[in-house]
Image (cartoon, rainbow, N blue to C red; front, top):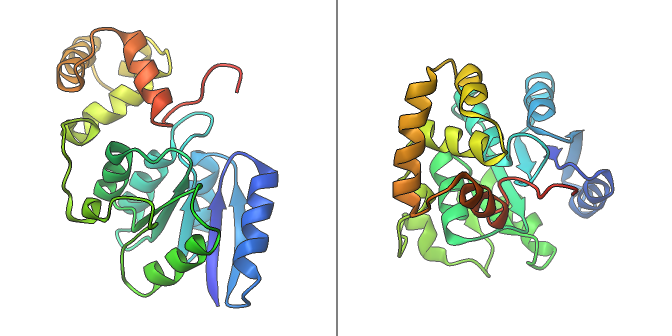
Length: 211
């Protein structure tokens, strides 16, 4: 039996995934969480075979969950299931250690296929995504050009937090965060913090206010 952890901030959506995944009889959902922190706690408590996570959730995105789980357990298997599926976002998820990426616009069976592929030691992208991404090929620079530290800072600042707040969260000096911010803007070709937020929303890393 394949033991699964689901992390998505919508309980009704999680219930639908659970029904879909368990109908074949070879999978069981052992726990469900609504954000990254809950996902980390539940992973430690239940040690699932695979963690399936959305990307856009309150607080840190699902990419942060992928990173934390790989940091905690290098052999952790994670699968991203998201409506946000730009090339840059898919590539970033794979770079951080996700074993697969399934677009929510895919046929339902794709999620089942993805679980079987990942548990079998293979990487998986749903058919509607460019399979070249598995080889780490992108046509243009973007999130993949950021270091892990820069990407963490990008996510924090794009949520509207100040340089000082970001510095405290990451145990850095405000000047260091400011220098990273300048590098991030240069790499992404944007000039303002507002542009960072728009980019993060467009790629599903944060939710728009009111959602």
